Image (tube, rainbow, N blue to C red; front, side, top):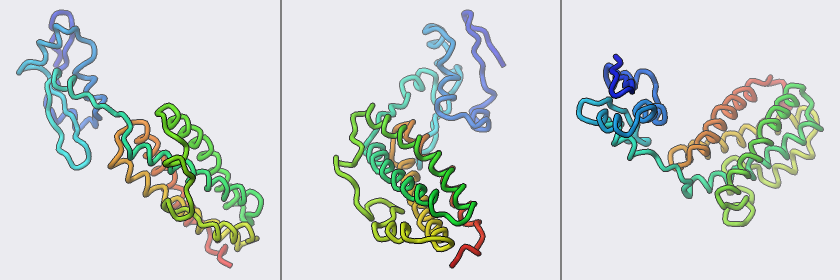
Length: 233
């Protein structure tokens, strides 16, 4: 139902559950209460009979029902925290190693499926590295955690120097099998890191990047596992 108050149309949801059923996230829910009305109208709407706003809590927390005025005061501060900065600093070299592996696949892959998969991974992760470096620069961070480069084993899924040496020396079906094994582990590590920052980080853009990693690399893990077993040497 729409009630017109002082020239401003205020839409009242039938119930708070209407917002939940519609799948409204924090930003959309807040915009329903805060957009389009003057300060005077907002003050009237925020009274006991005004529209209510559902404010979803952080993971593990219950949602809250707020008035428009309370929702305005509760706007989220998404300043990066240490989890956000650590994630981006670590994911840059993690992606860079994936590009090293896909570059080898362009030269040595025996299977067309493996070659095409490597091309898709490189096409996605190259721009993601640039985006993460840009984000880190704009937030005063360095491209390596603590100002130092990471070494083997410090990040989930990273191939060791010995494993990369074996990959460089492999040819034919042996190369394809080793590439798939290492890249599946590499992707699983990236998904693990992304899942962790979604629960511990605070920045909205980092959340978007991490969600994209989970969706895209999770799908690629499935494709790699479906590549024919005949590749096994």
